[in-house]
Image 1 (spheres, rainbow, N blue to C red):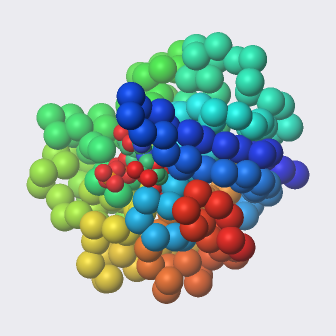
Image 2: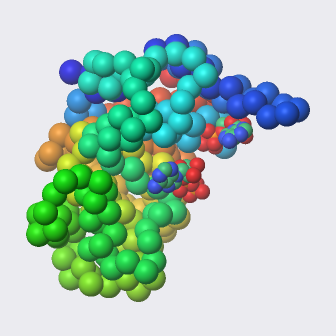
Length: 223
Ligand code: ADP
Ligand code: ADP
């Protein structure tokens, strides 16, 4: 089963004076349960590609299908709901809210759903348990290490029970010990729960642990 399909994707950023072709002729199908990494030099289009897969950014042309349905005609509202229900995001810089507790951060994506507060709390705590942070639920992000913060961000992605996790350099701000911990969590989610994961990374060792590697160069796929 194909969960994300990109066909002939082109992305051009246009400013007053310059036009940048960020992606050119991209054709990628991500199957359910795959763990795919995306590599390539800085500026080659990795974040743009991930943002397009995650419906955060629109391509200039081409088709995006999620679970076999083109999203082209969807309103912003429908896109936002699809994103909230199907996709979990993990970013290099965590994007946690510092004046919310760990549990409240993890509950955030669930606020957009009609769900009782007790159910939200239950799901958040279950997600925190999966990333080994049950002992830190009442802490605040600035009381945690980088690796722990990233685990909170992964729990936040998991709380929504997404089909797909999109991770943009999830280990990029971490030393190798903490980076490996994060990678082990992602590998375990992929293996045990068949969560589909697409990860941008600069790290060949991390990429080697995944099933498939897509290389970008200057906006084009080279493998
Ligand atoms: P990577 O993630 O591989 O570093 P990006 O996807 O961030 O690459 O960027 C790809 C190209 O698109 C780069 O040349 C970058 O300068 C350009 N770009 C990215 N975002 C914008 C934007 N909002 N406006 C104009 N150009 C952009
Ligand atoms: P950085 O490499 O600076 O750490 P990130 O990987 O954190 O960047 O973010 C990648 C892109 O996703 C950025 O363009 C950012 O604006 C966007 N982004 C980050 N967090 C969110 C979010 N919660 N919702 C929508 N877009 C986001």
